[in-house]
Length: 341
Length: 190
Image: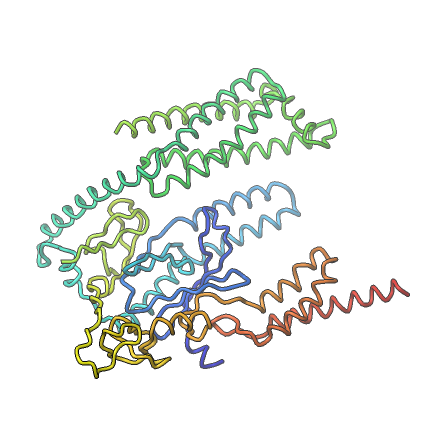
């Protein structure tokens, strides 16, 4: 057993293989260094899958920093704040989420790492923290260079078609600008290719539903009824689903930067709005004089509350209507503008 | 001159040479994400052209087992069959034929070809622990766990060796469950 243990040395880091947008695949990934290859182990709990990458076949390792740490800290922070307002017993839960924020922060910045071979680009989920990536690259480069040799900057420049390497600073900038021009034209070509794969239909539908949600909220503002409240809730649920699908679809597509930002802003708005409405509904539920046993009682209670009775609720309604209509119209304008291009 | 391009892993923009093999992160020119790329010589290496095997010119020379009209250059390290340069597969510092590769993978004789293993110890542990949530199924799963643990005690586990702690814990839990059910049933019968 000891000889087998020495066959593989574990590289630092653990992660989950991304099986879906919400990373709910639950497949744990780890990386091991063998004598002549890297072993990726994907543990599903009841079985393991293995992928081997031989040192002679590894062409490159690319890493880019992302903002997952910040996103998770925001989510934990929202939960910590939410539980902090509910009294002493739930303060412990709030403290738990605060400790998660601290641990997440101490683990360092998050990143995504890919391993390139001649035929594939493999994501390495276990290398999801910058510290682990730097450590892994140091160890891997040592063994890969023992197998393949070292590549000098001159060789890189020569093989990637740089015009010259012995330039002054000005000429280097000129060469870099030419590279950026080439990259822009290559990225424009890439945009045209990826626009073919996604036509923006989900985003268009999303913005139409957003406008419809704004109109429904305006009607609800003037006239309260149970069917309208029910239809509004269905519309909100549909909006949430469309939003998530749109966020997935826009990854790597040719959708314009402003449309992407608007979609992300809409997600942020929906999260904040849902959280505030949750607080308001809880408050109304506790304050309600009639007992609430069924969903029907709940719907009746919601539809009986008028925004005119409460100034805070009035502000929420106005902000919601304004955002939904404005964002919907802006989104549709951007989508039609990018289609015309 | 190679046309191989390394791309930003965030936005897929091709990266120029001065972005490569830097010790620190540099911002991608398009998406501005901090990117670090390390490249190795195999990126610029052209793949070797495969040999289709030499024709057999002299009848007294050995021929390939799979291609009788081609000259044998090396025997298979596992089965001993003669192989031409087309059939020769270099793997694990050995020359192996395609049949041995296939049978080695199926019968799990060649370790480096295994790409999947069942974790019997983890399954035994789940079988012992998860039914406890519902309590009643343990009357069936406890004996099943004991049988499963003994049945697969010596079965190979993951490629990275693991201790038997999961089997031991599963047996302990199953034993306690069997004991508890025995007491309960004997008490109710009496």
